[in-house]
Image (cartoon, rainbow over all chains, first blue to last red; front, top):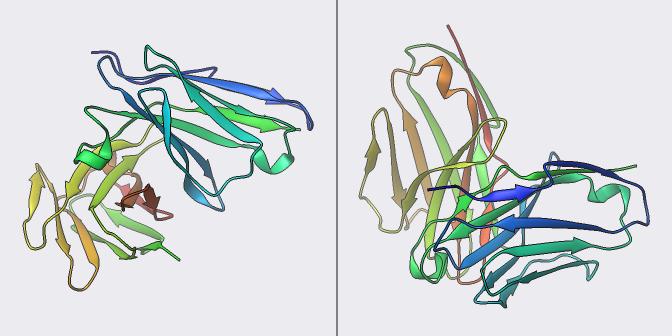
Length: 116
Length: 109
């Protein structure tokens, strides 16, 4: 079974631009969550989607948004990029109705975003 | 504010040593605690703990949760160089996973 797939793996953007990251969950998983990982803050929860609906959102500004499609694939978008948005963005998927039902989450290898 | 604290931040050992990694938490509406291993790629799942006092084992790794004292430990016996990684602890409440900053373990031959 293929794991969680994230694209692109590496990208460089300039301040003020926007970026869209994509995530394909493990086949059959309907819950997708996103995390930002930086050396200073560690792993921080961005948002979680289940059946195309956002279930929870972390403490990030409105520039960070996401969506989930009917095939469970998910995208996250960051608008008006700032230098501090440079990070590893990790997507994770979970079976059933997600971690809220006692299921664990499985991470993709992440998208490395550098903002210059 | 919900928080998860891991200690030590960093650990250097020799192959064959036994290590204990600590994770303490202050989280409202605790549901479960998870351990992950992260090398230079995706965090990989190790354990999920929901009940106090029940040890989970996988090979040389084991973990236990104490919900009264609000902590968990991850033990690794007979360490190998392949155990070198960052070990992440995360607590799930009813909304989200809250991660600690991790313990970096380096195992030298």
